[in-house]
Length: 236
Image (cartoon, rainbow, N blue to C red):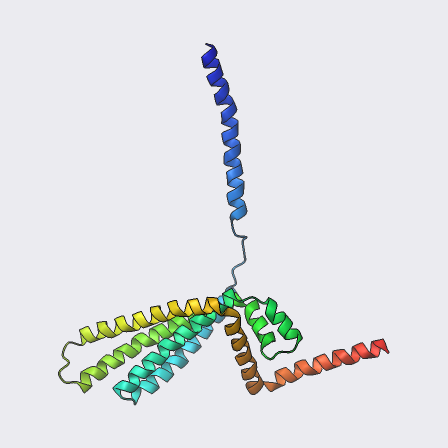
C-alpha cells in the first residue's frame, strides 16, 4: 500500500513538471520564429517589369550577335553569357555578406564609391534577388537558347553530324557544369572578398551616374553647399 502511494505521488509531481516543460519548449520555439513581415508586392511588380525588359534586351542582343557569327563566335558568346551569370551571382552573394562599418568611415572621408556601396548594402535583399534570381535565370535561359543555335551550326557546318541529340545533350551538360562550377567558385570568392567586391560595384555605380546623370550629383553638392551656408549664417 505504501509503495503504491509513493508511486502515485511521483506521478502527480511529474505530471505538472512535464506540462511545464512542454509549455516552456513551446515558448522557446515561438521565440525562435522569424518576425512576420509584410509582403512587398510593389517590389515583386518591379522585379517582373525589370525581368521582362532585361530578358528582352539580352535576348535581342544574343539573337543579333548569334545571327551573323561563325561557330567559334557563337561559342564565345555562349561563354560570355555564362560568365555574366557567374559575375552577377558573385555580386548577389557578396552584398549579403558585406559589412557596412568600413564604408561609413570611407564615406566620411569622401572616398569615391563609398556612399553608393552603403546604398547597395542597405538594399542587400533586393540587390541579391536581382543579381542571383533575375539576371541569373535570364542568362541561364539565354545560354540554353544559344546551345540550340550552336547545335544548328554544327549540323550545317559538319555534314557528317547526323545525330544532333547527342551534341545537344553534350553542350547542355558542359554549359550546366560550367555554370554550376563557376557559381560555386564565385561564392567562395564573394564570401572572402565581399567588402572589396561591393566597393568596386559602388564605384562603378557612381561612375555610371556621373556619366549618365551628372545633374543628380550636382544637386547633392548644391544641397550640401546650401546647408553649410545656412549653418554659417546661424553661427554669425
